[in-house]
Structure formats: structure tokens, C-alpha cells
Length: 616
Image (cartoon, rainbow, N blue to C red):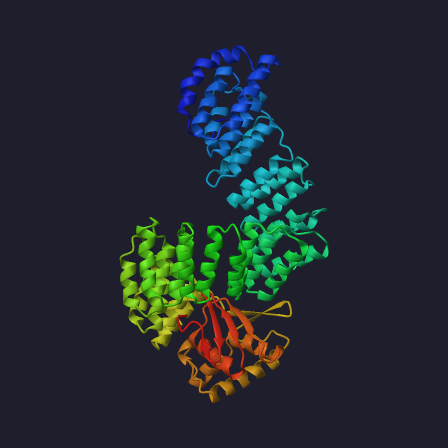
């Protein structure tokens, strides 16, 4: 059986042949005092190894003492190599053709399996050494499987994970809580594995905080945030005390849902229960408040926090960007640099996004150049995307196109879709049509490309071409992602889609929508019927606009909250221009502050105005 580690260390090649004959005639397993002294000497040296050159020297010493087959020494050697991020070096030595593996034990294999499971590039070798272990007749123990399952999780291979699950049952470790916890995590990380994870979770006789966190984390990763919150509530009901890891996950779910009130409750729960507020938890709180609509609270937490990391600074910069407070984001970025914190590529994405959402075109150009020239950061597609978005929002479509043509990397579909949307918004329809057709040639099975082309044809009033595109989508089984809007009320999340009549208050909601329509017309609102991409008359178009999910959610809020109460809603897509215009009027007519978080940013509607200044 050959080792998967293809690199044979030069040091090993030059030293081994000089010592192998002696070591074979004098096996190291003789329990003499001198052997024990040599063994302890090697272990002490390995313990102090903090560089690869020191490890290479210790390797030579091990060979000199004839301890190259000593399991205890080799286990420590593997562990040290892993700490120095060169486990391949250790495995090529330990499993060289000249190695006597008869004394290799479970602890040695566990160390190597764990080391490979922790890598980002060689997790499959963890599974390889697990198979080698079984092939050598070395039995796994309860510590083996958490490492093997972690490797499966990293690979995201459901079939492989299920196979290892079978081995866990075969060797009788399926009742160990640590193995079960890692199995839940493994299934959660595999595509299509969430139901298997829940089955393992539900059948566990004893659940600790790690078990709950693993399952909650699985839901959060999938975007099943309501399920994550529901499971957290069950965790409270059974009396399991959450730790900071659980709370970070719950805050992430609140952030995804835009559930500010729930997020506030989680913060008070953390304080009440005395959950340790490490840096990660503090960052999660800042991120939640910033992305759920209370960026001032995020700023207060930021100012009160000691030991800020680059993630802390970036969270606030991104939050300010989402709220259209670009100048404050720029100021905070300069403050960060002034304190000696070097910005990374993610911080620049947040900064450029802030410039985009606030129309700070010259600032955006300046910081893009600063990133490259002063901080030597090579632009990624996300940085280019922010710049294209900034030009497009400012109506500089031709400049955006020129920028894309001069990029050092190929534009991805997101960049091209940004260009196309700008072409449609600013009347460059022929250019938009040309780019969309190119995008469809590159991505023939991506439904959003067809939706973009369909929308452009609708804007051009080419209804026959639009119909053909929709027919082609139906033929290929493609569906447009429906617009939906969520609203948090009385600790519950309500979701609406366009034309939704599933809610128990549907009759009252649509009556309120009709009332809103009458009041809007009296106030001078004119529907943007060009947003209705159907070949129907103007009256029907107005009726279709009134059924958009944002308006249904606002009507629901007007019915179920006290006059003057702020309304907060979360849209899964970018808010359309008609709903944007209508919401400005609604905020003035009903004297409500309305906060809308769409896919890109926050909009604060108050007294007929929006915070975005129409840079949405």
C-alpha cells in the first residue's frame, strides 16, 4: 500500500540509509533505561520545535537514536508537523517504504487523521489514512471518528459520510455523544444531508449545547433561519444552557431574517444568562444590529468594545454602507487606518460598497487606487463589481462598460447582470439586450439571465419576443425567483409573496391595499406601470403593482400596529421603483417611518422622503 504523500523529504533520503541497518538489528521497543531517556529527549525536542528547520534537525536526531519506529515519538512528530502546517513531511517519514509499522497504534493514526482533517486542501488524505489504519488491523476508538467525520464534513461528500456512519455503528461508537455531535455537523455540511442530521439529532438520548449548536448551525448555513430560531426556542424549553457559539449562530439567523426585535431579545438574554462575550460574539451582535436596521446601536457597541479586530471594523463599515451613510463609512475607514489596523480585501469591499450606495463616485475611484497602490491588494471580482455598481447607480453606464472592458480579469455573471440592470434602468436597451444574449450563451441554464432579457423586451414593448423567452424558460423547467417580503410582529415572522392570499387576514389586507391605493392617488402618486412586464392595459398594470409583496406587508403592518409605530420589512430582492415611490407617499400619508431592507441596502422612508436619495 503506497502512501498518499508524494513528497519524500530530502533529509529523509540522505539520512535513512545510514541508520536503517542498525535500527533493524536493534529494535527500539526494548524497555531499557537508555531507550526511555532517548525517547524523553526526543519528545522534549519536539515539544520545543517552533520552526520547520528545528523539526528537520529533530528528524535527524530521531534517526540517529533509532527511534524512527517508536509510536510515541512518531505521534508527537506528526502532531508537531501538523502545528507547523507540514503534515505531509511527517506522513512521508512515518510511512516511508523502510518503516516498520507493526508497532503503529490507534493514537498515531488518530493524530495523522486529525491533522489532515484540519487542512483545507488535503482532507481526502484523512480518509485514506483511516482506510490504511483498518487495513493494518489497528482498531479505531471513539476519538477516531470525530476526526474522520470532520474530514467528511469538509469534503461535503454525503455518500462518504453515510459510509463512515455505517462504520461508526459497526464498531459500536454510535452512542458516544461526541461522535454523534460530529455526525450531526457532518450531515449538515453535506448537500442533501440536513434531514439525516435531524434524524441523528432527534434520536440522540442526551443532547448537550454542542449538539444543539451543530443542528442550529446546519439550519443557519442553509438559510433556514426560522427553523434555527425555532430549534433555539426548543433548546431553552428543555433547559440546555447555550454557549457563545450557539448565540453567534442565533444572531446570524436574526440577521438573515432582519428580525431586530428578536435580535434585541437575544442581546438581553446573553446579558441575563451571563454568556461569555468573546470577540466573535461581540462582532455578531454588531453585525446583527447593523444589518437589522439599528446601525446606531451597532456603532455604540463598537465604541464600547475593546480588542477590536479587522472583522469588527469591517462589520460597522459594511453596516454604514447598507444604510447609505457613505461619508461616515469613509470616516470610520480612515480612523481604522489611523489606529494602525491594516485594511484587508473584505474591508475594501465594504468601503467601495459604501461609496456605491451613497453616490460617492470620486471617493470610490480614490480608494480603489489606494487599495492597489498603497496597500498592494490585488482587486478581486468583488472589488470590480462594487466599482461597476457604483458607476451604474450614478447613471454612468458607458463608463461602467469601459471599466469592465479594461478589467484585468473576466467579468463574472454578477458584474454583467449589474450592467444589464443599469442599461434597462437608464434606457440603454439595445446595449442591455446585447450583453444579456452574451450572458445566455455563457450560462444557458441560469434562469435569471432569461428573466433579464424578458424584462428588457418588455421595456422595449417587444411582447412577442418576451413571450418566446418565457415559453423557452417553461420548456427548460426554469422558474423566476418570486419576490417575497417578511415582517416581524409579536415575536413572529410573517412572509408575503406577490398576490398572496394565504394569510388569515387576506380579506382585510386587500381592503387596506385598496384604501392605500385611493389615498396614494389623492396625494399625487402616479404608478410606474413600466415595472409591470406584461402586455396588459394600464388599469390591470396598476392592479398588479398593488399586489406586490412589499405593499401587502405594509398593509398588514398598518392593520396590526398602533398609529405612528415604525414599520420594518425585509425584501428578498431589490425593491422595484414603483414600490419605492409608493412607500415614500405611504410614509407621509400614514405618518409612519418605514424601514425597508432589500437585497442591497436599507431604505428609511419618512415624511415622503427616502434616505437613499434614490441611489438604490
